[in-house]
Figure 1 (cartoon, rainbow, N blue to C red):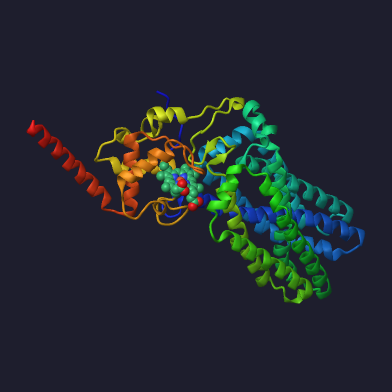
Figure 2: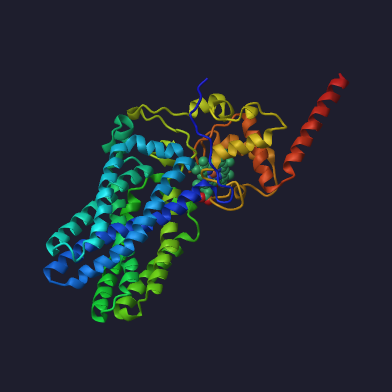
Length: 471
Ligand code: HEC
């Protein structure tokens, strides 16, 4: 029999694994984008500083650089590996798919990242010590390497949505087909725009503390222009980005986006533009606290919904349009020698094909059905549906409050097993597995469902016996 190399499932009870990854990743987006935007800002400021002989600009780079060291580099370097740790346990085959496709791209990114880290230290500790021209050159190298890290990562991220050139990549494999595609460039453009917005807002925290009133006003006005323009450019790139998404993504967007999404994005954009307009007209009002709040607003109202959407529209896949979010390989990729695991699951079911399946749950009985059902939900659903009341798309909310085991079972066999859903993977279930999962799902909304199910089985046995007695 074909066994499938699925890993044991990691699950965080209250929020589900998806949100753990999401929380860490969203914070990381703020740190990393601010870092790249600031690196480019430094290059420009260093250039103007040298050209116009303005030492206060170098001084500001030093201050912002020190702030970045803590804000972006230390916290970013904690959340970065945090993404590695959480995805390794939460989505082991997802991250493995990315590594197998892009290991050298990633190595390249790390080389540039090391240069970038040295760069930020040099920006802070060499300011005023290096002669100005050399300092400017270092700033430019810092800006370019920093942007290169973004370039590499966005290619990998966009592969999660879909391979750059899906047809060629499926047929021939190869990392260039996986890496470069319309979505890569649209995503890069949008991220580039919004990273300047973040840099301008976070820069306000540092600029607010400047002593020289005239310089502070000059700088805050420039930051307001950069921030306001980049927010408008970022927004106007949105249709281009949407146009590069696969068809299924549009379906999800139209039907399944959280209600708060559009208002939240519009509010945060409107508020950002108002904030920049206000700081342009009256730079005096900017304090570190105000800019801090604006940063928080971007994080909570802008980045979180944005990342939620990126996660949602990728469904049912986690990477490359062949690996499902629940870690099962859903399609052949001839170019990469990858084979779909759906046939093996159809033949043997999760309970037989999964290597790490608990031995005591390989046979399904009326007694162990609820536990087997829970294991099935963990394995097949929990990457996208939390099993508790909170977290990502709680599973219990998608089924009627009145437990109806037969009805749930029919749905599981009719829709999920056959792959007759729009944004969910095909999840082949054996009849006994579907029943076990149905019992578990019913028990989420109605704790008595299990005892009723077991009682039913006894009545069934009694009926059976009395049938025999009748004969
Ligand atoms: C790849 C991620 C993914 C997996 C795995 C997954 N679902 Fe879903 N499911 C979704 C999404 C996305 C929706 C749309 C819900 C929304 O966004 O409000 C959904 C909706 C549903 C619905 C509502 C009906 C519908 O078609 O919209 C049910 C019922 C459901 N899921 C059950 C399950 C069960 C049971 C499992 C495991 C056997 C499962 N799902 C596995 C992503 C997934």
